[in-house]
Length: 238
Image 1 (cartoon, helix red, strand yellow):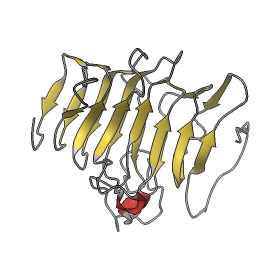
Image 2 (spheres, rainbow, N blue to C red):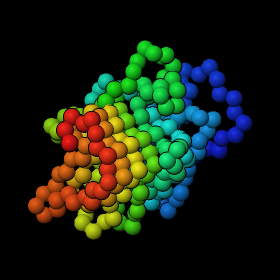
Image 3 (cartoon, helix red, strand yellow):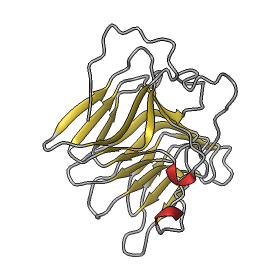
């Protein structure tokens, strides 16, 4: 993987005003890396996934915008897969934003097409937290919008992953993510999907989605989230 140091660059007249990212971030030993805020450039997820493996901590600076490249191929919708630690440095007034490449409200006209395209729900896939031993995640002070669609029919699975933030745990007893002080909006269907996990979901705003929070699991390991003090409004289903 690559984490260059940026300093003193003049960036102008490019096809995309962004830093292109993609692929798997992994290391042979415990490692911490950072996506700094660089001249207000968004990070543009151009490949199928960004994946953080279990021995990696990725910090993302306050005010950083992460955009997922739009594709009309439902089985190629971009995803952010978290098995390690995603450490967002956002604040109430300066959150980290995850959105569509067609969203000009955050990060400007990154795709350079003026007003030709507009964002819509399902432009990208999802952020998925898969709990791991000895890994703690707090997903906070963020805005997540215009995702929530991924078709798995290509892969021998006839189901769709139509949710924007996904929490799952392969084993009981792992510490599941805490989601707090996050705005989740304009999802293709579910804002948050929980299966076989027990995350804490508190103080969030979830709006203009299908189901605000969707639970799945089985009799042996049902989803058991702690849900507290969320604002849930203008969803197609509550």
